Image (cartoon, rainbow, N blue to C red; front, side, top):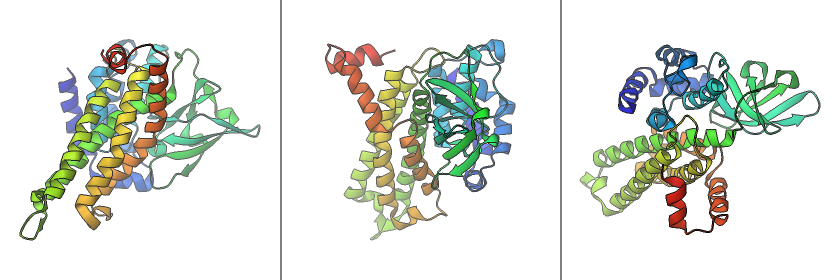
Length: 330
């Protein structure tokens, strides 16, 4: 089942999510055409219940689709919207029209406004779900003052307090864990693309009369990249191993810690192998490595999630191996 969906999503993204479109959305924050194409297929509803028009698939089945969002650098929050709509449908309430991004904890700005210091990937989103006093709230991007954060798709958004819409009926949920689950899968997909592009470049670029991929130093860097890429793929699968629509927090901790750690190494090695050309705006590599750095921090970096996993291990009177068997094996 997941193969059929994954192949269909891949065909859609091959047609509609080209590097040129990614550049356009990054520069204008307008991804309406891509989102319309996604909505027409119903792929954003894959985790939602059938009662509200979804496919009611499990997170395990949809994990490969989330990885494709990284592989194609989807500039709209498809993976995040899938998780948000699963929560709306579990609460038995219709979801809002448009795409949904997740944000960090809201903080008050005086008595009249609230601030989300980082809404991850919200540049082309219609809504943001962020925690406020321990409960998730829905906020319309159009009603906020939106500020860019560096060269990423993340945004800093300030809303009037009247824009807060508490999501009653939602289960108790860790918004950071939801974002980390989506980011881990997308990191795994993006690193796969970075590795494939770097391997192809190493086999094409010649120096001293032969491809640079024939030199042992380059082969060592490629081997190290491959280790990180395939370990990240397995970690992301663990993060999406749930048999229902929502991830388990400890599984997410392992997935996000491993993929975030790998993102630094894969980005650095790919640029080392490409040399100066890898930093040019014309080459697609920088689109991927910039997104690797952004997703590394989305929902918490490796240090945050290593602390979560470590605290859980210390609370159990078992060995590390038994802990992994008990908590990570679905």
